[in-house]
Each structure stands twice: as structure tokens, then as C-alpha cells.
Image (cartoon, rainbow, N blue to C red; front, side, top):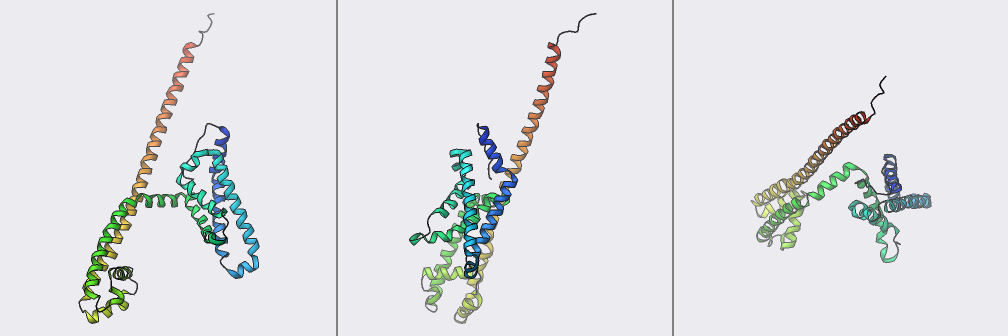
Length: 277
């Protein structure tokens, strides 16, 4: 779990300690993985014809354990449970599974696979990666704005250059932007797009090469750089917090030792003198 909660109630603390125990967490991780396998098997019609009822029964049993986990945690933490974003995510994912998936709500049946995402909350390394990604969103917004400008400029240029001869690809600003997106992904851009256009415009390769260099190799590397920098900053902050915690713990030990020595000294001074012979 992402946080350790403490309550004034001893029994609530015992519940929290039990739920945070590594064996309990490992058991829940195993159930999430098993649930993911079951949800995958349910997509196979032959398997469902043979052991479908058994798979559904195991799926419902696992869901019941997940519900019990949430109920126990809410009992221990109270309203504090909903102050943790990861706990809110778990609650929503499990709540979706409880909604009757029939009629117009049948699409919710497919959303049961979201339970697999609970694994992120259970695995510390995954949670740190997601946290780094979320903290990188402001920087990613700037990179997204930059690539939007590049796309807009390139789409206007491509529309003006190629719309008369290749209206299926560059007939308007929207179609040009979509074509450029295909080029940016490097999906068949050379044989399907660039070379046919170069038969009419021999120097069109200059435009495509420049666009790929800027949009694919430069801007998207900025995405990676921002995310890596954010994750590195989070790790550095965790290291500083850990070092600060160790320093505080060391100071508390020194204070405790000094208090023990002072207590021993006071006991010696307050002790009655030995009787004289």
C-alpha cells in the first residue's frame, strides 16, 4: 500500500498492521494476477464452453475477497481511506464490477479487466513509475504544445504544397495532420507516401526528412527526457526523505540514551546513603 496509517484505536492499528503484512500483500498480488488470467480465459469461447461456470465461480470468489479487503480498510481508516488516490481508484474499479452489466451497461463487463491495474498499487516500483509519470504532466504539457505547433505548421505547408495532386492525403488541414501523424509513426511513410509524392515533387523528400527529424527523433525524445527527469527527481526526493528520517532516528536514539543516563544519575543521587557501621 502507499501509506501507513495509524489510529488512536489499538484494534484499528492491528487491522492495519495485518493488511500491511507482506504475506497478505503477496496473497492479494497473487489474486490480482490469477484474476487477470481468468479474465483472459473468458475471452476464449472454447474454454468457456468447457469450464466457463468454474471460471466465473473463481472470479466471483476473488471479487468477494477484494470487496472484503476494501471493507476492512474502510473500517480501519474511516474517511481517511478516501483521502488516498490509490484507494479511491481501487474502490472505483471494484464498484464497477458490482454494477449489473446488462443492457446499455453491458460495456461495463469489459471494464472488469481494470482490476488488473490494482497491481500498480500493490507493487512499489510500479507505483513509483506511475507517480513519476503523473508528476511529469506539467512538463509533458509543454512538450505537447510544442509538437502541436510543429504539426500545425507542417500541416499548413503540406496542404499548400500537395493538396492539388494528392487530395486523398493532403486535401485539407485535418487530412494533412492525420497523414503527418502516420509519417511520424514511420508506418509505411516511404513506400506508401513519400516516394509517390516525389514522383511529382522530386524535392519533397526534404520536407519529409525534416519533419521526421523534428517530430519523431527530437520532440518525442523530449517526452522521454521529461519523464525520466521526473522519475529521477522523485527518487532523489525519496533518498533525501530517507536520509532525513535516519538522521531524526539517530538524534532520538542519542536523546533516549542521554535521558537514560540522566535517569540513572538521578536514581543514584536520590538513593539513601548506606548505613554507617
